[in-house]
Length: 166
Image (cartoon, rainbow, N blue to C red):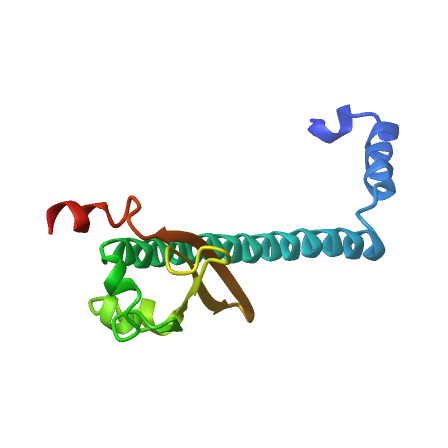
């Protein structure tokens, strides 16, 4: 009886072994380059994500700063001209105590600093004031500032309620 191997020509048996010996894997240098490319890609992705989170944080805090400024402007608009010009009620400049305004959320009061400046409008002293509200905060080691400027006039739109209904 002949074995199954004896039917295979001798030459093809050795040729298949030679072709397996001739194939090579990647060299150590090629594997190192591939690993370096992979590491660079991962590092870039992590840095991009961190930068994105910083941008989201800045946008969120800018929105909160705008809400703080808008809230203060609305509070001042509810005052009469006499109350607005009384330095005991609204000092001409100073820090706004956010802990009283946002007593339910102490995080806002601890993160943000708001200042208000009320100055007479040049050429219209006694009838118009300029109000500037600035909000400052620090995140990721960078200090940010947002400001809002408006005007308030005697017997104007803001004072209309008090003169007609008093």
